[in-house]
Length: 177
Image (cartoon, rainbow, N blue to C red):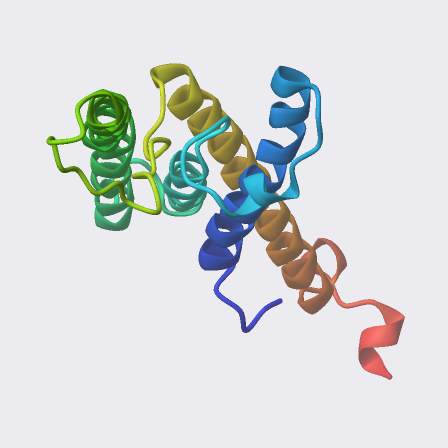
């Protein structure tokens, strides 16, 4: 994995795993398996939060907290998580109100034939954003994954350097061969 961008792999991996975990959490909450949960927005844990937190933790573990790349990753992550639990969640709540309103209009139009109302074929998607606990769970999972990935990479780098350096800084018999 030397030639790959491990930060990107870690972040995308966190997103994928979090999406897969939504199947499990849906089973726990709803009591049935729903494989479509892997392809939805919203739900537990937030894959957006997992991805940006994994990237920020990975960069911070490798570059340090004072590095510009760490600042970029943290600020980017904070914006994404705020958006996931704020604006997108409120948009989903508005969609739910619109769908309920449409149901009411459908009922009224059935009672009053002169009231013309054409019902849409498809309702608006209501599960767009996250509750704060879902964002927190995604962030915690992503942070853990980012730190673990950075530790693995640092360990591999240390082992690679040890292979190149002579033992205790001294030449051994094998070095002369």
